[in-house]
Amino acid sequence: MKIGELAELSGFNASRIRYYEAQGLITPVQRQANGYRRYSEQTLQTLQIIQCAQLAGFSLEEMKKLLSTTATGEAKHEQLLEALWRKVGQIEDMQQHLAQSRAKLLGVIENIQARPDGMGCEANAERVLASFKQARSHKGTSVDT
Image (tube, rainbow, N blue to C red; front, side):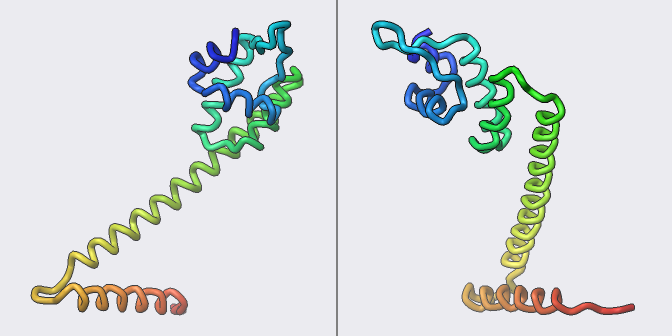
């Protein structure tokens, strides 16, 4: 198939496909006598793998390492599983970090909304900032029981 058809089927534009080819993510193709590149079904499958891997958070460099073993037919089952489990762990770490960040933001919102009646915005901002400073100073101290 020509690059236009491959672009349409894969959802990637032609320049992205050429970029992936230049980066070694997809197997370089030979040009026909008329100068057109002719891509195989395997290239479409590889682009679909790239798309899924990107959505899962794999970098181009990580994908290149994984795809280099599959393209040569030397895919190592254990290496692939290790990389996938490593990515799952990274995603779980990100989820934990995001949950902590969310909880902190909800705390800030709650603190801002707990403005005493009649207190102006500037005074409330000072109150909220003071509570952050106080929380930080308590974080650095430990109490032995």
